[in-house]
Amino acid sequence: MAEPSARPGPGPDRGLGYRPPGPALGPHPDANARNAPAGPQTGDGYTAAGPAPTPTTPPPPAPKGKNVVRSSLLMGAGSLVSRVTGFGRTVVISAAVGAGLLGNSYTTAQYFPQMIYELVLGGVFASIIMPLFVKAHKNDPDGGDAFAQRLLTLAALVLGGAALVVTLAAPVIAAAMAEPVQRDLVTEFSYLMLPALLLYGLFAVLSGVLNSREHFGAPMWVPIINNLVVITVGAVFFAVYTSGAEPDASGELFGTADQVTNGMILLLGGGTTAGVVIQVLCLAPALRRAGFRWRLRFDFKALPLADIRRMAAWTLLFVAANQIAVIAVVKIANAASGADEPGGVFVPGTTVYNNAFLMMMMAHGIVAVSVITALMPRMTRAADDRRWPELVEHLSSGIRLASFLLVPIAAAFIALHEPIALAIFQWGAYDHTMAVATGQALLAVGIVLLPFSISQLQIYAFYAQTDTRTVGLLNLPVIAIRIGGYLLAFALLPLEWVVAGLLAANGVSYLVSLLLSMSLLRKRVGLLRMRRTASGLVRSGAAALIAGAAAYGGWLAWPDVSASKLGQFGAAIVLGTALVGVYLAACLVFRVTEMASLQATVRAKLRR
Image 1 (tube, rainbow, N blue to C red):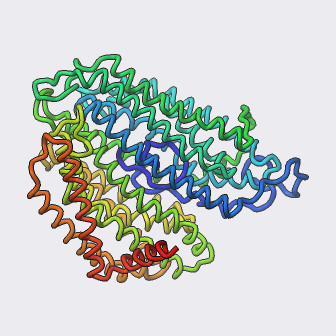
Image 2 (cartoon, helix red, strand yellow):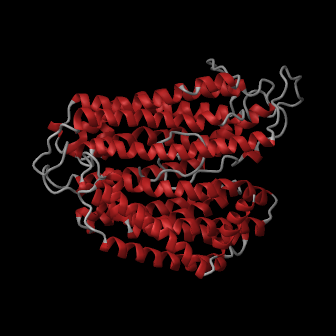
Image 3 (cartoon, helix red, strand yellow):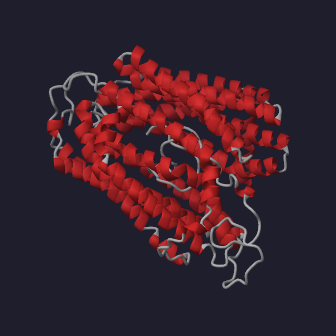
C-alpha cells in the first residue's frame, strides 16, 4: 500500500483507520474555508445570497460540550478498532494468498480503484468540499440538503463514468503496472475490483454529509464491517483453497498461473468489492437518523464548480504527483518479484512492500495522526491570528511528543524485525521465507519511520495557514527524488533487497521533505526551536539505542523459533516488552522531558 495519506477525514478506507495512497498529508479539512464569503447561502454551500431568507426550518443546534467529548471518544475507539481489524485483514489475506504470484497480483489490482479515486475526487474532497458541507449545513435554510443532493448526484455521475471507463481499460492499466507473468491475473482481478471506485466516492461524500451534521459514529465504525467482510473472505479462501493446496517445485503455493482458478479470483476480487458495497449500504440508517434523504438533482449550476476548480488546482497537482510515485513503486516491486523464472528462488515483491509499509503507517497513524488531530485546531487558530511563536510552540511540542513515542517503535522494528515479522505474518501460504523477507523490509521501515512522521507534522503547519500551493510545489522535487531512488534501488541492489531499497528511497525523500519544509517554515514564521527538539531527539534516541541493543542481544540468544508459532510470539512479546522497559528507564536516566510529563500525567490519573 504505497504511500497512504495520513490525513484524517472520510475517504476510502483500507482498514487501518487512515486514507489510502498518497505519500504525504492532504490539506487540513478547514483549508480555504475562511476564504468563503460570509452571509446566508442558497443551497450551493458557498455562494453568498444577499439578504437572509426567512428560514423554513429551525437552524441546527450548536454542538454541546458533552456531545463533542462523546463524539471524540466514539471516533477514537472506532479508529483503534479499525486499525486492529484492518491489521487482522492484512494478516488473514496474506496467509490465504501468500506473497507470490497470486498475492502480488491481488495487491496490485487493489491499488487501482483507490489511486483513481484520489485523482478524481480524493484531494478535492479533503481540501474543498468538506468545508462547504459544513457551511451549507450551518447557513442554508434547508440545512444543506440541496447542496448535498446536488453534490451526491454529480459525484455519482462523474465517478460512475470513471469507474466504467477504467474497468473497460483494465487490460491497459494492468499492462502498465504488472509484469507479463501476472498481467492476466491482475486484469481479471481488476474487472471485479475497479467498480469499487464509485463506491469509495459515495462513501466519502455520504460521510461528509453525516460529519457536517455532527453524526460521527457511522463513518468511523462502518469501515470495520468492511474489514470483517474481507477477513471472512480470506478465511473462506484459506479453508477452501490454501489448506489443501500443494506447493510447486520451489515450495510456494499459487506460484504459477496454472494453480489459480476462476473460483479463487471470483472469491477474492468479488469479496473485496462486496466489502465496500456493504460499507456504503451500512451508512443508510445513520443518514435516516440525521434526517437526510438523497434524491437526484441535476441543477449543478447552483454548485460553486468554478470556485472548487480554482481552489483545488494545487491539491490536484499534489495528488497527481503522489500517484505517479505509487505507479512507479508498484511497477518496480512487481518487476523485482517477476525477474526470476517461475519456480525459482522467492524474491520479495508488492505484497511484502505493502505489508511492511502498513506496519509503518499503523505506527504513524496511532501516534503521529493523533498528535496532528489534537494540534491542528490550535495551530490553525494561531496562524489565523498570525501568532507565529504560538504556532511554532505547538509544532515543536508535537514533534517532541510524537518522536518520544515513535522512537521505541522504530527501535523495535530495527532490532526485532525478524521475530515481529515471523510472529505476525508466517501463516498458511505466507511461508517462512516470505516472513523473513518482510522482516528485512521492516528493518528499513524502522529507519524511515521518524523522518516520515516529522515531515508530515511540518507539512500540517502549512495547512494550518490554508496554504496548499507551497505543499504542492514542495512535493514535486520530493517525488522526483523518490522515483529516482526507486530506479537506483532496482538497478543497483540484489533482487532480494529491492523492496528494502524502495522503502529506503522513501526515507530519503521524507528527509528531503523535512529539510525543505523546515527551511520554508523558518522563513515564514521564524525560528522553529529545533535546538530544543534536537536535544530531546538525541536523548530519546540514545535511550532507544540502548533498549534496541539489549533486545537484539536477547534475540541472538533466543532459541530457534522458525518452526514454532508459540516461540515466535513469545520472542516478539517478551523482547518487545523488555525493549520498552529499558527505553523508559533510560529516558528517566537521561531526563527526557516528555518522560517527566508522562509521569506527571500517570500520577494525576492515579490520584483521581
